[in-house]
Length: 245
Image (cartoon, rainbow, N blue to C red; front, side, top):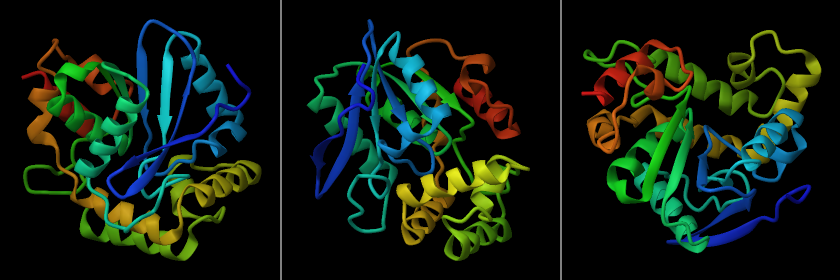
């Protein structure tokens, strides 16, 4: 594969979505990124580039920036899972992918679940890493963040986004050294503006795709090991149970 894959654009509704296609193999893997991303800045990270090169050694990888992030159009700062699912459909149609395995990370997991439930004929497999079906606390869902935790996270984004001191960095890698924190801060700045990042967090607060879990796994048995896909959080175990019913 090329040192850095070429970035392409596809128009979905009123926005242009940036994507890359690289690697070879017997199946296509659509990587659905988490919170924010930048398809070109990804290749400046030794860890991320090694990860994607490994994936590309056994499959064709489709990588993209969700609307509102990275090299994709910002458009309005109102993002929905349904819009982003439509963006995925536009990318897959452009690269002539009839059937894909989905790899959803963090916030990318709910969209992968919704896509798999809506388009089961175009979904061959699904991996969720560190993900969830719902992010906010509710009487029937005690694992999520409460209002105070959400407000703290949003305030931090608006005040410290793109700095080494940002809560976004310390939450992901507690005790990160200065060099890592600086590199992570640069990646975040390339991936979203403070306003866009705060808008995404507000969208995440409303996510609840528990109702699609049975449909997302109705094509093959789903157990705790596969549904959790390496995530060890309590809500992932709960959602694995729901998906297997």
